[in-house]
Length: 208
Ligand code: FOL
Image 1 (cartoon, rainbow, N blue to C red):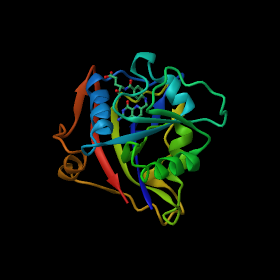
Image 2 (image 1 turned 90 degrees about the vertical axis):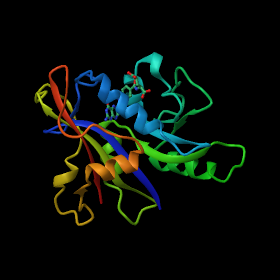
Image 3 (image 1 turned 120 degrees about the vertical axis):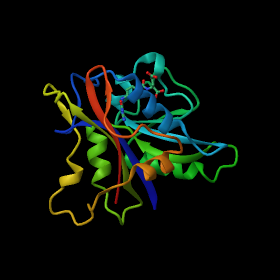
Image 4 (image 1 turned 135 degrees about the horizontal axis):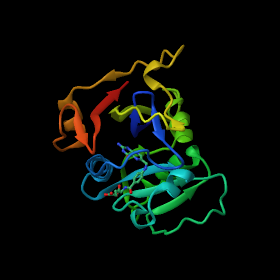
């Protein structure tokens, strides 16, 4: 079974986006995202899997996200990824993306995949969080940056409320300790409430 990690910054009401962009600009939080998703075992690379709209939301100068395999999901297989690189690819759906990453593991000349991160947006977060534990791939970890204040009421895109999922016996999420978070990401992470540009947030890790 392939284990997937969701990484997301979300408000207390689970807001993640506004007008096709992030509702905030938090350089230290973004640096955390870049470091966590880039930090792979020597000789391997992590994959960042995203929907087409999330790809388009990344500033052109930052994409493809460097030092990571970028996998973009679109039903439109004629979609032109721009700019592109040998580490960037288009997949028709989540299942195809994961099959392609998997098959790559056994090809000696190709880069080995270490961790697979689901980086959004709302459609892909929902689809992956709904995968069952018996399916070939399963989200067993969420790296959540909880935006505590302000409330960013103007958000128009939301993360499914994975912590409150009803009628879902597979969804026993529990919050990890700060030490467990640091051990998994492999570097020291600021503890407790952070403040940047008047925005308060906290780095959290949840597993099931
Ligand atoms: N998870 C978290 N914790 N914070 C986020 O902002 C976030 N954003 C996305 C997905 N998960 C997240 C999706 N949106 C870039 C821009 C938007 C984006 C993801 C990444 C981006 O430009 N990243 C560059 C860093 C650029 C910089 O240093 O400012 C990268 O190299 O990762």
